[in-house]
Image (cartoon, rainbow, N blue to C red):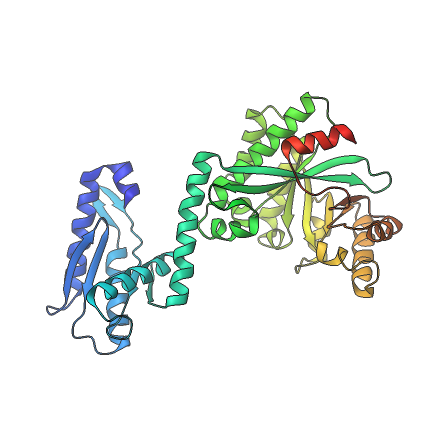
Length: 384
């Protein structure tokens, strides 16, 4: 509703509200009550509903009626209603509590993709509300530039010479301090905030790569993780190319890491995108290799430069026979296809020695260095 007001004006917004109000009242029985609660929220009271399925029937009818596009001055506007339901006396003991719990259930409906209805459930509602608060904070964080990148060195196994770095996002939360991705990325992915967030990471990583190159530091390429939403979005390759052009950075300074699952969907489209990225000079790596269901045929056919052994295998090296066998097989397979191998999560000398013996070319992990803020990383590079 806010987007309608912002883009088409308040007259269009008023027309939308009036149309929705008419559709709601026409869907209900004469004994039901409906009122506009404020903004774009309406409240429906069903005094004669005796069973849960009666309420579900009404909710489904309301969703179907409201979802029909609205004609506002010749423009069709689609709306996605979310319905929250609370029942008396099971969910509340007073009118105010009933309204509050129906409102909470509405947040649960929004968190589950909108255009659906949800009944009040204390545990689920709190989780959904927290996710919506997080979503709002993420939008503000992008506007306030609260995100930062940390960089973890990637070195050559043979002599530990620096050959690149991985960019890792962190959030300088104003109340909670430095947050790691697992605290906010799941919410960002659900609400499609990964598109602007991923674009910010890409641009910031490229800017750092350019700055370090101009300072004479051999850091590149900088590896950036891609999300599924980002990679599958329309115009993704064009967006990458635009960042490189605007920041005046050659593609050779950038490496893109994709999960196995991202490479399994729509093989012709994936192949086309990767070929275009490769034409820009960008290195392509498969992240967390061995944890998915990646087809070996895909690995053979796609223009992949590097595979990354997942830390779950590396942490048990060299003593766990199954982990050692998997790591050995990944290295041999990648080499037979002309691809290099990097192992992440290397934390001790025994792991390094085993990987070196097996021919793993590159390493990344706390044994070399933990992820560092940009300034600290630059200092680390100058000292090594």
